Length: 131
Image 1 (cartoon, rainbow, N blue to C red):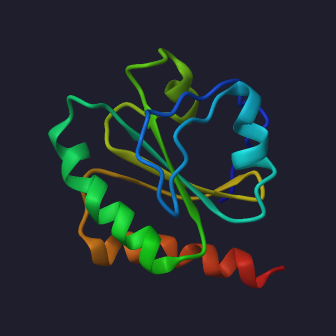
Image 2 (image 1 turned 90 degrees about the vertical axis):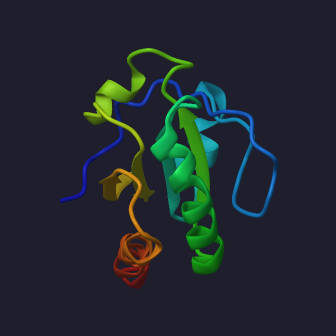
């Protein structure tokens, strides 16, 4: 079931080196541009710098997104802004959510293997085929 994102107020993303599928910052002023109005699917990785499973998932997620090539990846550090992640029902990290056309397409929790990340990303194909 796809969920609407009309409640979004503000997102802060950790500083990351820029690469093909990362942006260094998303905030209230840029959320619409990078997520809501984005013509491509978007993956948000909710994480914390102190979280070992988050560190384990990051290279797997980056490689999977780069290999998939049809979406953009952003990271949201839950310790930088209290409360925002609660709107998504996030109670543990890592927690990854895929958005397309202002709706949640998939989500998963934990440091999962690359094969499972790929299966989640392929759910975007179903949404892209509707276009």
